[in-house]
Length: 328
Image (cartoon, rainbow, N blue to C red; front, side):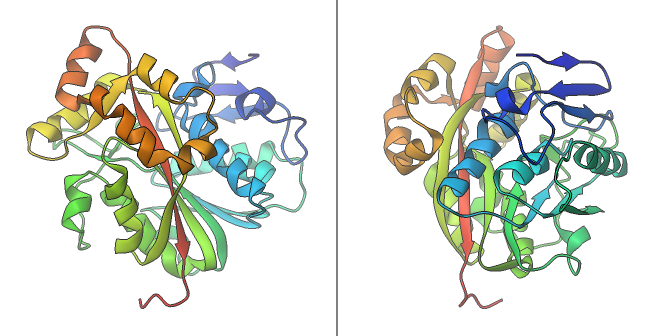
């Protein structure tokens, strides 16, 4: 793969990173400028990258279903790579994007704008919590995509210190269902709540969720927020930032949350061999059952990570479709 990396810049080939042919709406070499708060794309290891291994297959699956997204929004865009993928694959023309850091949002805006070939794309960005910066600005959206953090920050953590894409500030004023708190999927639930009035009827939220908890608990998020939910795609990835992420899940597992499940990378590779993410999505519950004997609790997974071994986890893209009879 032809990829160049520096401290402040990454250059990615979408043909290889997104596994698509000739690009028509974005440049054939994507140049991304980053800040210290930006999530670094895993340009040399797509299997460990959320956009390459999770978002792009989900977007492709929608496109193959004939569902495009002229009005698209991404929550917590980071470098803006997910937005560019939506412009190319889902033919997005209005692109909403948010992030919690001013510098990340400004860099994302420049990254998206500078890598566009299409002349019909309107960018609508906002800094702040989840979708709140765009409420009242965007409406009738076709697809909202989110890949939000799961782990509540420790009291000693500082949101302004470096890149914190796997953690969030724990204190929330909203009422959270107990199962969402126990399973560390609080932000995914809140994103679904905030998305409902922004979506058109029939529009959908794609929630990219590391399936370290049972799929049944992930599906329950859609129903709790008033959507029809299903698994769109199911895949796996090597755990990125393993010490921080597995360590975070282990910490909360010791506090009585979870349990949270990881797997040997070799087992995941074999279980998903020959299956597209969409095909695996149709068999997600069966695959989950077949993987059950190989589950590794977070505390034990952390011990493996500390000994130098790699662990992985499964990933669902929860497809939550807005139905017309939901009472807000």
